[in-house]
Image (cartoon, rainbow, N blue to C red; front, side, top):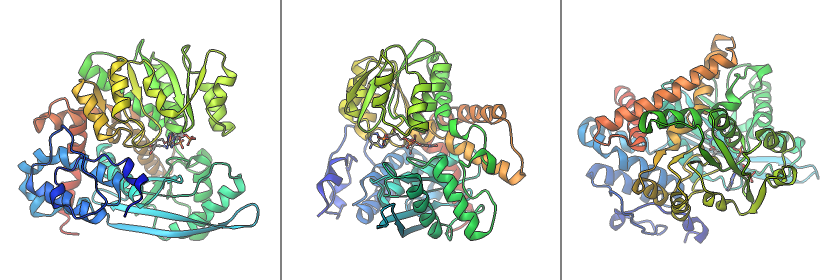
Amino acid sequence: SAPRHILSNFLSPLDTVHTIKSPYLITQPLGRIMLTDEYVKRVYDQVVARDGDQPEFLQAVYEVLDTLQPVIAKHPEYEKNGVLERLVEPERVVKFRVAWVDDEGKVQVNRGYRVQFNSAIGPYKGGLRFHPTVNEGVIKFLGFEQILKNSLTTLPMGGGKGGSDFNPKGKSDAEVMRFCQAFMTELCRHIGQFTDVPAGDINVGGREIGYLFGQYKRIRDEYSGVLTGKGLEFGGSLARTEATGYGVCYYTAEALRVLRNDSFKGKTVVISGSGNVAIYAAQKAEELGAKVVTVSDSNGYVYDPNGIDVAVVKQIKEVERGRIKEYAERVPSAEYHEGCSGVWTVKCDIALPCATQNEINEESAKALVANGCKVVCEGANMPSTPEAIEVYKNAGLLYGPAKAANAGGVAVSGLEMSQNSYRLSWTFEEVDAKLKSIMESIVANSLAASKEYGEEGDLMAGANIAGFVKVANAMVAQGVL
Ligand code: NDP
């Protein structure tokens, strides 16, 4: 039977459980609309039967299928063409051994993955994650989300994701380099500028992308835009580093403007994480007039009532690769608290989760609401459990789902691909302006789709529907593949 620790985080609502054969599932129906459309139910049951041991993947699929029901009801051609069955099945999953030698001369073996999920609207595109929690189900959930996210950006990119259970924490630069070279030695057979273009994600930043790019170039003898997030000296785009965090704030600001006639000005913001997304979300939120009072890592969080000094966070995380605890040792006004989930008990107007999946559960969501939080926009992928989302909805929060709110990273990756193809570079201001306009269009397109399908103002339903329709139509047009 499945290890209990896998099940402990599995909160997917399963009204269709009576037809489910998998022994891995627990039933935990929610007080939300259950799957009612027969076709949608059938597809979900099939995913459960096949992938019942992949809780994060089931969670991501359920959330999307739930909100697509009005679209499916209106468009019988999607069932006729088997669009949903095909959407939930990756076009290709590559899983490989990554063997490398550590500084002590010992052989280490990790697992590598690349899930090429959907190429209906462009080459596979999505990041690489290096983290001990990486497994096939985690990469599949991320790849599945990426399909609709990439569609929402309006750029021609399909969905994919990859990574490894390699843990770069405590490894030397030389070990990280040898790992990246070993990883790319296999991955390079499966990617290319016109087929699949990976980028960064958790623990994959500029250093790792540099090593990966170098190895691709060496093996393939080809200098092309096969990865995004590259250094500026070798084809990277200005503003790519900032893009996801800035994009979360542009999205939040636009949603606040349109739906609440409000802005970041004077608001208190709680941010989790202290990596790439968190740092630049904090920087932009402060630029837009808010006070950011927290950042965190997997050990704990810092609370600084004077407002987080982003320059100190950058020095600790980007330069020294240290722990966020050190912030409180350097900034007298800050307190450090052990345990990362405590960050959601801090009083705020706006919460921007920017660390990892399922970091806000029902209890944390209730704590946010009780403390007056009015807005949750997601920088991380799937940071809210289904129960947490339910709490936001019941409390009338403005909720911006990950695949819309954090699409700025992949959007600027798309712009990096364009610049590589043109062999030119745009200025920071040009890229930033394009990013802002893409994030604003995501809000507008999500709201338009939510209205068209009777869910007016629901940014989650709107994002899923707007992202889906474009991909689905392309899949129908291209025939059964
Ligand atoms: P980084 O590796 O730069 O930072 C990750 C941060 O999250 C670190 O502070 C890390 O702390 C924390 N974290 C990671 N795992 C956990 C955990 N299990 N519990 C608590 N904290 C944790 O990654 P990114 O900033 O790039 O990514 C953060 C999130 O944003 C991810 O969900 C990613 O998928 C998503 N995202 C990233 C994009 C990008 O462009 N980079 C684009 C779109 C989404 P610690 O150091 O202790 O591990």
